[in-house]
Amino acid sequence: MSQEPLDNTIKFRAGPLKEAATELDSIHLGGINISELAREGLTQMLRRAMTDEDKIEIYERYSTGDLSEDAARVLLGDEFDLLQEDIDAFREAAEDDTSDYLV
Image 1 (cartoon, rainbow, N blue to C red):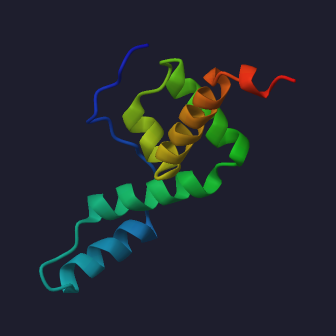
Image 2 (image 1 turned 180 degrees about the vertical axis):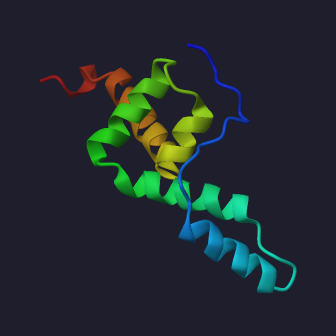
Image 3 (image 1 turned 135 degrees about the vertical axis):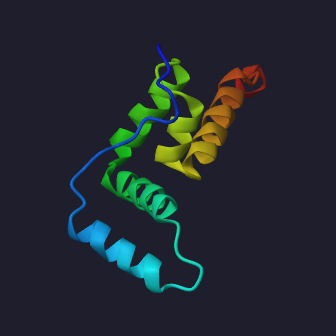
């Protein structure tokens, strides 16, 4: 899997969004970080767009090395660690010696 450079940009026609952000930047004391707002907004929208099945697929792709941990964490947020904990707990349960429970 080839890793793309981290400085890749996503381009879209911002139109009124750019005008609004530029205007707020000009009137807000100290300005605003438009790039940070855009990253945060895109992250939230990506997460909102995902179904539970998408989340499972994202984690599976991460597990097989087809997706970086950073990208998986962007998409899954706190659920990344929760999924990891669930998988670890499942593995432990599967590896437990159950011979004591046999009758």
